[in-house]
Length: 197
Figure 1 (cartoon, rainbow, N blue to C red):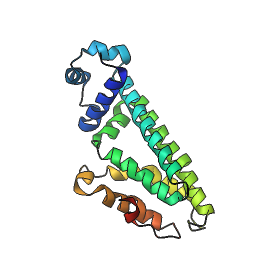
Figure 2 (cartoon, rainbow, N blue to C red):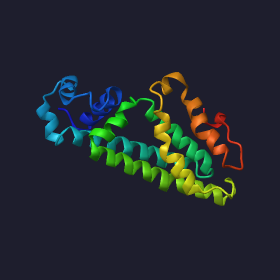
Figure 3 (cartoon, rainbow, N blue to C red):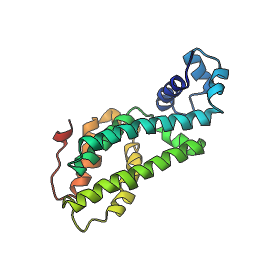
Figure 4 (cartoon, helix red, strand yellow):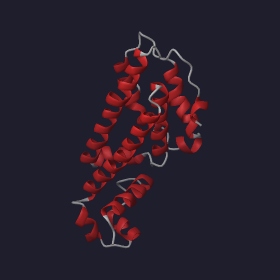
């Protein structure tokens, strides 16, 4: 018996690998050896399946974020770097078209993803940066909200600029160039990638 969770997990694997638009419900049913009717017992349509798949990924990632925050409570900057390292571990399995197709074809799923991005940046990362600033780890002249708006909110666009980014460069190299070097520009301390290997 195929469960809803099994359907979601299989959908995530295939949508992120092949693209949400290209991978059809017919192909999903064939992969799982079930009828399309079984999929419709759990989901209204493809967009509902994609939206719930996105929410499943977000819930999983949020759980990982909470663990990172709990384990690194003493250093906000390290916590931010580790959150993005974990995020890049998720992103490296995505076909770049996945998020673009969601934005274009699946507004409900896109709304869930956009809400997550804004919460991550303007609640989680913003709070960690505020904490770091109050501890004297961030230069006093830095406008944290502006840094979040200009830089952290657009992190996925940077990571997906090139189709082959995660194939060409190591995860640690991407983390260093996209996150660590930029944080060094606003911090009063020198953070090295060696902490995170």
